[in-house]
Length: 358
Image (tube, rainbow, N blue to C red):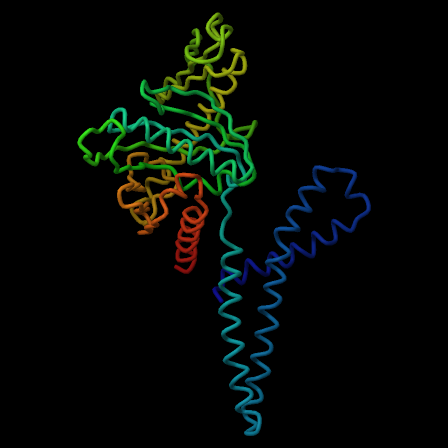
């Protein structure tokens, strides 16, 4: 086993003993926040240490079998034990490597989902609507909550742009690979001659930041405008200046929010989206430096990168990052994204394991 991995496992074994001692102290529950933190760490470490102990036990079994080889009567049995033991070691080592992979701190965060129509005019807006329905149906299957933050409707249906907040366990971990360019090939409903058109939308998945964020905004760098909202919402939404537009002057990022009845709520939502976008921009700039050496541009924030094609005439969806093609377009457009999400996650995990072995 890699020396660095062994060192890490020894450290975790020592830490587990320390945690067992701390949690056995009767006074530990006097500080509930600290108690929860320690129990969470204990739960994360224990399966790794137990697997490491299994690895060590298997090593001892192999060593014992090797000592029996000198005995002619036991040689055949010993050889079989050694082969079986080495196979087990290989499997256990792979599982340990997976458990030791760095966890994305944003995986359990809620997300902001942004979908924007791109090339293709009205058909692109209709596709943006189809994508939003796809993600909405997937969220419903996960029992997540969806809240529309802002939307710009197209005249014939769909969206020029829509931003929604999706809240639920593991939302970012499941949808973080959806960021990028989504291309559709189909015959639009407005097409009279049956020709296939190609249109595109961009999708951005941003983790919601914690209340105490590492992004500090200087009020002097913000321009906040209020105006009367337009669109659905009854009489009230059009009678007050409840809509809010915030511009971050250094980056030029603009966020608008008008779906809430309260100016205060709209401002808070817009500020949260702005922080998420700025944070995503910072991360994207850091990851862009490494993108050339990665096969997947996962989480890089490169919204122009075409990641997936939806070909309706052929009933297929192709993800270009992992060369995956699925002939189940109706199910996927109805929110059955589990296979896509899991295969993207597995590919990302494989890349991390490859990097760990270098």
